[in-house]
Each structure stands twice: as structure tokens, then as C-alpha cells.
Image (cartoon, rainbow, N blue to C red):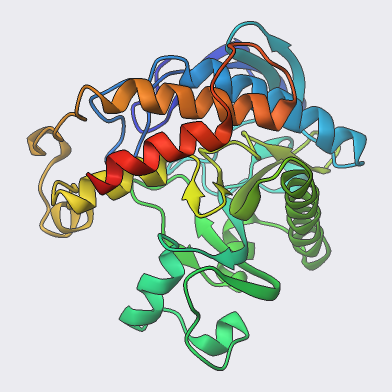
Length: 321
């Protein structure tokens, strides 16, 4: 079952019920998404396999650190099997932990650095985020490091996800005060594991999102694919290792897709114009970057990719052309 706004395909092996989890398989594809548009025109060969290995490695690392996850097993070359929960929908209303397993319909975002490209800079300029909320007294510089992680929440089942307050996130998640605090604490623990590992392998873990499901025994369990470049902002030196490079190219060439304006104007998705394709020389460079990142993250040489330094230099040079 392809999900056109996602980089993964979902296969349901055993549907979840109100009393037990099901079993699903994520197939990581070579697609990428930017601007909330959905799948962009150009697949990046090897991206899906590279990210699948990163996801499996990260889940194993989190479990070893005592963080419960929905991961079951890796299926070569580009799939993982996981515990599947019910998804709240407009006809069901919010699920509650005493009604069986469900996907929590909000994501927790953790920010420890504010590099160029972080939405924080844009939101501060627009007045939709305040310095006080960030715990700062002056406007942050590019690459600002925060003394303590900045935690916020966003929806995750809407056409364009939106930031919500903690009380609104708790209401949407249908969690008690204790459960909501556990979700926050677990997200921070995930960020700590990912940040420490990033430091060990020469990367910067600047921010990331963590998703959860409530299990059949009412535990909060980490879901989706933390620690991958689709869910975390990873940098090597001053270069982004992931879709921010692609986003920057579209912006630099004034080819970004104005999704927010299209939605605000009520333009049906079927009438949105097709994004411009990437230059042909860009695709193999991004393939090398994703493979180099995966080999760096997992410590396993699978594709004999260039070093991450070489791969990021090549990607950076394309943006500057």
C-alpha cells in the first residue's frame, strides 16, 4: 500500500484489533519529500535501502538503551517488520489507552541546535514562536546550540501538520498527565541516544521527531523511523545529510512548491503543478550521500560508498553552482 505523502510503503500482514497489535511491514523507497508536497519527481537510487539499515540499527540501539520500540525485525534489503496499531480517524474519534493499541496522533519534536534551514529561524521572524518559548533572550545565530533541548509538539495525520501546544497535544493523544510526561521523557531519552551516537561517529544530531504508539498493555512505544535523515536533522560539519540539501536547491532556484498557499487558496491537490525535476547530475551525488551516511551511522561497509566528507563536499558544491 503506497502512501504518496510518505517515503515508505506500508504492507499490513496482520491487522490490529482493539485488544492486540497487528503486524506491518515498512518498505523504504527511494522517494523523498519536501515542502509538504508529497513524493517528488526524482527517486534517489539506493536511498531506501540505506535508510532501512539506519532504521534497523537505530531501533536495536534504542532497545539496548532500555527504550521500548515497535520494531520486530529487519528484512533485507529495505524493509522492517513492526508492531502495528490502529490509527485514529475522523469517524472513530480519539482512542484511549484503555481501549487497546493505537497510534498517538501527535509527534514530539526535540531541538538541540538551530542550524540554517531550521524552521525556528523562520517562525521567530514571523512571530509564531517567541524567544521566551525557546529559553533565549537574544535572536539565535545560525548553528545556535541550546543549553537544554527545546521540546514541542505537532500533529501528524493532517494534510499539512501543524504545531500545537502541550495541552492540545495531550488532548489529541488522549493521554493522562503521567502518560503524557512519560511520552515527553521518552522522546528526550531517544534524542540523547541519537545525539551521543552522532557525536561518536562524527555527526551532529540537531533535531528530530519521535512518534509513539500505545501498546495493548498501555505502554508508550517508540514508532516509525527515528535516527534516519527523513526523521532527524543530521549534519556533517556544516553540511546537511539529507533532504535539506534538496530543499535548498529548490529554494535557491526559486522552484519551491507553495503548498501552504495552495491549501489556503483551496486549490485541489489534483490541480497542483508537478515540481521541477532535479538536474541529472544531482541524483548520483545524493545516492552517494545517503549510502555514505548509512555506512557512517551503522559502521557497516555495504556499498563501498565515498567517505561522508567526500559525499557532503560533492553535494554542497551542487548547491553552490
